[in-house]
Image (cartoon, rainbow, N blue to C red; front, side, top):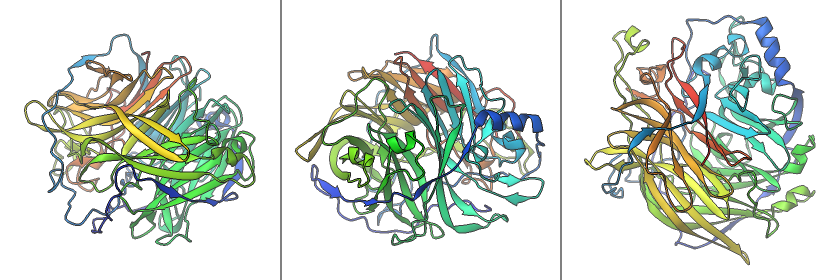
Amino acid sequence: MNRFVRVLLGLILVPVLPLLGQQSFYTGTNVTGQLVLARTVNPIQQALKLRLLGGAYATRELPKAPYKRLRPALQVGRTAAPAMAGALAMPVMQSLPVTFAPGIFGFNALSHLDQRLANGGNQFSVEPPNQSVAVGNGFVLEGVNNAIQVYNASGAPLLAAPLSSNELFGVPAAINRTLDTYGVFPTDMRVFFDQTINRWFVLQRAQDFDIFGNPLNSSRIYMAVSQTGNPTGIYNLYEMNTTNAQRPGCPCVSDYPQIGADQYGFHISVNEFNTFSEQFVGAAILAVSKASLAVGASNPTMFRFQLPFTTGYEFAIQPATTPPGAGFFLANGGMEYFVSSIATFSSDSKLSVWAMYNTATLGSANPAPILTRITVPSMNYVYPDVATQRPGPLPYGSTLIPPGALAYLDGGDMRILSLSYAGGRLYTTLATQVTDESGRRLVGGAYVILSPAFRAGVLAAQVLRQGYVMARNNHVLRPAVAVNPQGRGAVAFTLVGPDYYPSAAFVPINLSSTGPAIQIAGSGALPQDGFTGYPGGFAAGVARWGDYSTAVAASDGSIWMVGQYIPNAPRTEFANWGTFLWRYAP
């Protein structure tokens, strides 16, 4: 608990990539019994109990960042610098003008103050916020780092106080400030509503630690699944040991879990890293029977694919989500799509499209899904540099000795950040370096709309439309896309730079066009002034920023988005981040 996870900087050779269109197949293993129902919990009762008990807020403490984004080692001859040798050139591109979104409904949602004070204050100061949102049945569920809150459609909170995820999962607090002992530190928050089984999901992963904060040789995933369609009701709590000691290169942690679903399966993709050396071992995909989860099975049916890192695309494999009212792919026994980008952290002009078919067998005692993959050409994308900020007051940084300077913001990397499947199309986003009209290298977003097909065992895909989202002289961070069944939606992100404090923004998108302007939904009021941007934090002069934004479609066709920004609101000593949650009707 006393260390930050370090990015592995050793060098390995990535094998030659397969030819475009060449199809690969993967077999997996029935691992039913590894995901176990452990207990149940009622969020409303937990939140009410916490409010009645109260909790002290320790003003002096050791802040804690979540684990750094782990990455595979770099290719031979490459470095992590943004302008590395051999990177694809990014030509001058057309920026989008910036305006304020007219008539947008939105509100301040969970902040660092909320997350820090949850569970009676027995939480760490955590930066950045990894935020996620789910919408359904008139409810909005937000999860950020180690806290959740449920809102109604008007933005009114329905829990008496933000609930820590430790309380939801029924595990010891991250830190007991009375006894000075350590518990469970979950990270990589993901929330989800599945309209086909009318259930809510909250998922996180954690490495195990002893009560003194020393890392142990084990890890696990925690997953809460509601018993009804009400996210404030009772949840079934599942646990899975993800140490995976039998896999060569493990014991491992399952880093950066991503979630999606098709008609039959709830899918979790993870990156597996050795617990102590942090050597990247490979990716894994878990397919869980939705029918098993809907009835609260003690041991839900589950199937696992272990994917060695052989082509460079077996990393951060993003599962697709399907908006309410859109059809799932039901042929070939049911199918879930995935997309991944290259993980060499230089540049590329290809994406991998994955398809898991025969997912209907997850409802049987002998599941037998099959996974296949192809590589398709796309536009160029390049490892982004850091983002600059607009100068402003630094209440925390100014107290340091010597005073801290205005930090850059972490620009992220090239992994796929979101994937939506509607109308037989895949809509995906990632970060990239871009070049504006003045020749400035900036952090921007990229979107790709793909048309996949699967016939007679053959997977194919082609790009229908693609483009970049960028603002002149400013940066676009962590783009996430969602569309409704008609293919109309939005790309959400943070807008920041010399002209804007970190702000929540979006651009409309559909199958045939992208909106003419970036629209600001939540205007930032101050620069980022959190502990990761100063000496001893994330990197010298570079602050962490949320590893992702989130966008989802609701049953009425509207798009709900959540993003990190800096509000004019109460803060803690060590961080001033907040999240803005807004609705857009395309």
